[in-house]
Length: 424
Image (cartoon, rainbow, N blue to C red):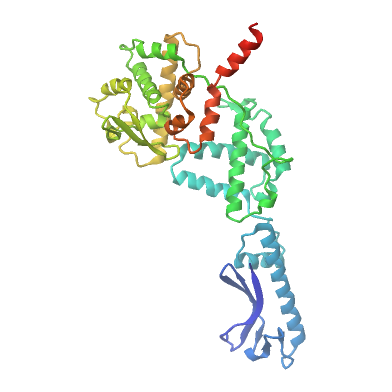
């Protein structure tokens, strides 16, 4: 909390006079407002009565002036703390100066200031995917707001309702053309709102805004709810067909199949983790690795099918001790931005190849490397694997996460109910 009082400077100036003015104290740091008024002796100021002693010429006028400045400083401190929560003595001083000079200050911390700091942190941490995606989403936000000084507090529920309507009006660019836009998907719109919520939460944590004006939630506020998506993987027959498909004359297609199947064999491992597998991760017939998404460590048995595939890569000279050669263009894995870019490039290449493989199988499903995680979940549901066991395999922090995820593949009871009703 900020405090202010009238003080006289402890040392005389070059003319032997003692400056008198306002001292502002906030968050352990002081700031001073002096406007040229001085006293020939510090004893001429009565600190207890907060007035200039009558023995000084124009004492009453100077006392009134100083009292007015003190009242203004206290009022500004209270207003800033109410609006922004996080203020400094320098900020209070600057606000008073700006008013005196006829300048208007934007009310509250600018949204862009919070956003720029967030993007800077993502870039410096090497979170390339997050950085690029959220930077693109914020471009649309600035196109809508048309105000770089827009305070966080102004991004309220009404503002975001209008922003949501704006996003639904053909904001997706097709290719490099700006003449053929089309509507964003509901999931994409939700992702745009998520970054706004993230920045609001950061502003609250930094005490830059009050959570009383938080625009997200129920009762007329912005409710963020992910749209349901259909998750379909390969079934047992299709997986067997994929495993036995002859791709000996197609090295790139064979490699894509190998990467996807290894991910499937290790409980639906994400492709990022699959591409980062090292030979040193395998000890005593088990795989030990930390999941890149949440840093959760764990250990899995080496399936016999996975061992057969990995045997094909033991003679390959890969950099950085990796099992698969997809990241060999990198001299090391230290630069996270370069690493994420290379992983994305490899994933796109494998994605295109596995779609060709699906065509050779006459499979019409839209299969990608990530769909092999769905394939594992689907087979686990068919085999009635316990959710507790799956939670450990998936490395979910909460069993609820596992239950929600598996519900996408739980069709047996619904199918039985349907048969019971219509199969009379």
